[in-house]
Image (cartoon, rainbow, N blue to C red; front, side):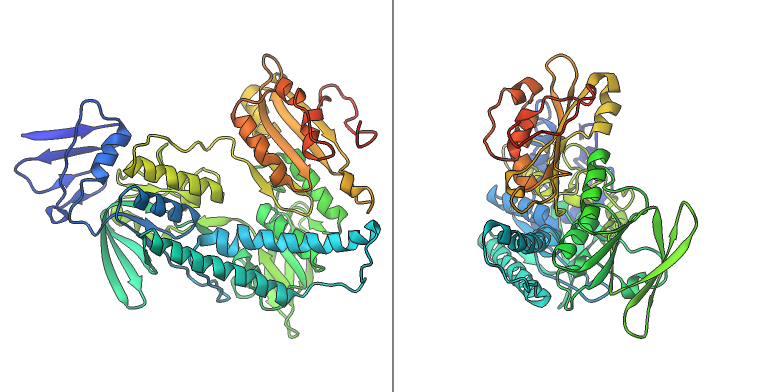
Length: 541
């Protein structure tokens, strides 16, 4: 007699007389001693998986999370809160220059947190000089101390590492500092300092994230650094070539300029790929206005270390073919990131990989039913810390709690922390046109003048907002875009409104808080289609 469970992704057959259960990925032998108790007729897919996840007996853990970043930790802690036995593996391979860090993943150690702190440091330097216009007596000789800044940033990071370890202990998540790789779909081999350890689990969540890429040119690895290194660099970066014009490259170039160094941005194709391109152009222009040069349509050819220790970079203009060179103190690669799938031996577990990432379904399930993935490692989803955190929590609640709620990856707000910050939520203008047609899109836009910019006479040339909306009907807002100060703080509230079905009439009937920059969204009345000048006459016009 046999009993079979079918759904859209996998089948499991239980044979009364046999000791092997076959799945779509790999056989599960009797050594794993599984005990199933299914109700087939009315259970949802999530309920079936919760049943499977909570009926283990002889595995070491109910859940093993591979990766101790934001998404993995959120999933692990939430699973324990719902009664699961959980372990979390985390291991950081040093960069080519030897940089390494503790628990917490990219965001805490070499991403969002140190980036925001460096950005804040650069803004403070700018504010100190602006203070003179407001009547403060400021010493013109004020300058930053790079080593002191790095020490302060790293001390904060280490404190977060420590708090994270304590939090894991208190929440009963076993922390394993080891590099995990699959032996089969239910077994990991973890390389520890003390030797190898075999770990079994009913369920796995892969949350290993990614690391920066290096170009395949002479000297790139030997002499270049990445965002993994810049926040702990033990010497001043000096004149820096930032190769890459995604948000990481622009943010690094921005805070380096604000700290008094000389960054140059090398752009292979376009600035801020994946973002609204009008806004991307304004961001780049605002940086150029601040004295940050851009080398457009240019690729590096080689990096050579000179006798004086400086770096000679040869590069080529891809349109003209012209080859040129310049000397820099630091070369920072920001050309993209790759998923950390190489060491996992995913083929042993039967997990499919697509372009260094792991494809998943709407429940973060891989092609192997009991193996999931969250965060930057999954294919085609936003690579943002809050996305990974919420996806991890929701996954744990579906697996071990009484929840069927799935992660909604649409309309996720984000901010690019350039000197003049850019934040957005929803569709870019290009994507809205692609999805709905140019005749069905109305773009409301306007430049504005932040009040705090007046006295120090800061440039307001690129302070700009726009709403991309449905042209007819209820005029639903598809996307909001903001370029100006404290952009993340501004767009966060509007993100909730957009996800709740914000319309242009609602926006226009909302009373703004004056004088703020956020109120500019409530004052939008000029459309691109009208051809009228979107530049205001005054701060209150």
